[in-house]
Image (cartoon, rainbow, N blue to C red; front, side, top):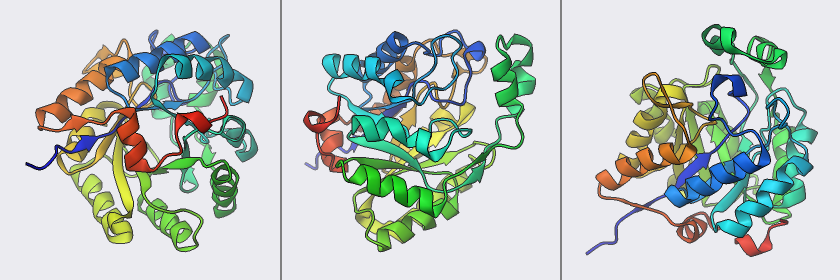
Length: 310
């Protein structure tokens, strides 16, 4: 009897897209981020994808010092794989975005595979009346955000973090990002197994229709064959439908309050663990098993939690 397939659940617990006025449940302080990550891991997430925030007003904070308190707590209380963002917020410089992962040398770091328009402004109309901080209004209302990740930027991140043994969650928001990744594979700057996170439903990237999901998977299959592990991220209401498609087709899934604030139509998710549990229900309903952290490490060829910098 063949072993049941293992599905990696990644949980992105706070991110830099949503702002604290949108949901009282969005983790902001170091203790809240730590508890959110540990709760997600206990619910079944093998990987936690981490950003930091300024505890005073919730704005994104990409200083290494902001990550320090919750990284140590998570490591003490969980064996989950820690993934540190190099995305930070789209308004930050590449130097600022790289600093936490370069300092703390995690097993995984996220890496956006190209420059793109980043359209957060549709959320302003929905949330404007409840925004408590001016920075939220300025941030969400900015129609000029260009998330910069040039070939030079990507190469700099790859070479800097690969020297620490860190591997990558390659975030691909459109077809061109897959071709960009193929360039770096052919150049020998990355090696398999590639952990490819295809992102659906964010304005500026590909949509979240079934055809969009299948197009990205077909393209990745053609470019990378058996050299990659496929995972999906559906923004907002697309989170669980896109996760279900991936799980059914042999992929992995990412959930979390970074990507969606919701637990259903008009219902805010109260914890990241709630979203992990919903994804787990889909996966196990398909007759599949969730991967443990150590199984995720094996699937992704990670260096192990004993050789990180925290």
